[in-house]
Image (cartoon, rainbow, N blue to C red; front, side, top):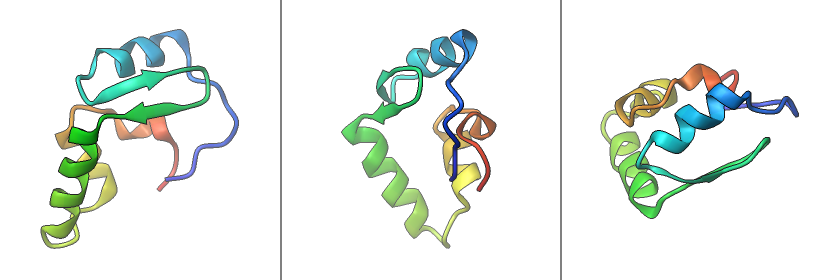
Length: 68
């Protein structure tokens, strides 16, 4: 997914921080937990699940991250 240098809004940062898969978030960057990375790889391996669907399953709004 591509995200330009547009900062996350206060509401987006709060939403991201509330997700247990989020390790940390600042204005421009999100860091994910090891558990999320394992989940992502597991889901991606299942019939090449689309990225947006993986993020939705993990409780994220994929539109926050930009275009796919």
